[in-house]
Length: 498
Image (cartoon, rainbow, N blue to C red; front, top):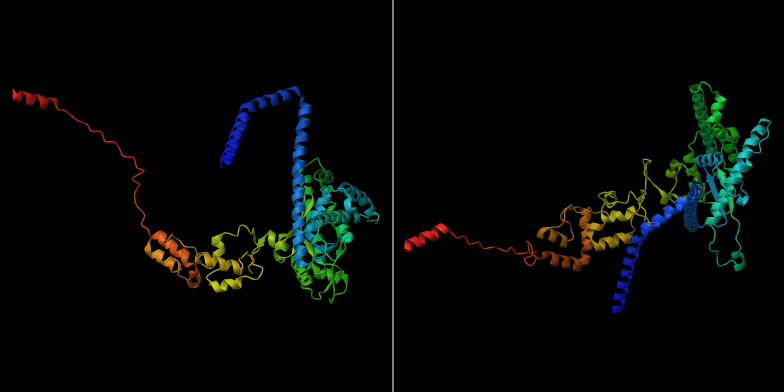
């Protein structure tokens, strides 16, 4: 005990000495820093400042990249274990919003990859796009390879980093487990996706043309062509070519067992359908394992697809256990997510974070006036309510009922604290004084198992507390006795005696 007290005293003493020395020598450090800055030229100071900024930025980018890699690896392992996926082959379904985001990233030179995995850099892609504009006039179109190669390289880089250091099965020999197997990625899209992507590109090109004409009309001395160059029209005009190149490089999911056989009829039929509903129908039918009417190449993990999307409308329609891929720029990267863990979508289509909906009062109020027996029906084996809100398992509800009847989700919280003998008596009966519902009475019957804790509470609260201040802690005021002497009265007494 003596040694422990001495160590605590020594540590506090050293801390005080260090703090005091810092405050004493801090002005000296500031003076030396300013003196060195006065000696150095301004150009060198600017260079040092830029190096410091780049070092801090590189550190933050590295930290963000490491956190992203760990998050992707954790989510991919959870999804693979949940659905029993093979770790060397994955299927990805891309929608129109994701392909449009990839096209914008390619046109804006946001891809800064080193070309690993067969992918080219963004500068080479844009050079090929600009060089092939003249070749397209002559009927030569060889532009579709670089964008697809870049997208596949980004996909391979993401999944290779997420699937690295995964444990192999015990049945495989040790030599094969040490060898890193290549990852096979299959990228698909639906016919509705192609129609929606072309509509998006046409809408954006139309808006760009209107902006260019408005700028040309406002600038009297400029022509439309010069306005298009000044407004960045060359950057936007390659979006349609990149979109068509991506559609040509990816595999289109065809429909089988349909009455329409021609491509024109299929395209007209897919143009009238909603893309989000088509993607949801495809994911649910493939996950069910039943024979479906889609021409998908059979292989590993044929019953599970990652959905690459940027649209919240598609996310809202997809089931909670579906896997998602999201693209972010600056820096360009892919995030692997699970739809149920990211957002909570209500029936009205509004997006609410799951953490924002976990308040106790709203969560208890959402159950309605159903009894404790109905609470078990609102939950299934996963512990998540049917409505999409996070819920409690049967074991959690039983434990909360054992602690107190007020903790059961069906019970309303008491409005006031229990004061007086009547409220204490109601607590002993297991029924709150405020709420007298049937569900709470049923829950109160089961809560009588903790009679010992309730009786202890009653004994403690039945004591009458001494009202008023503590007499030992009150300082008594000193009373000063004042004696007043009347001079005139004393003189009168003396005169009478005489």
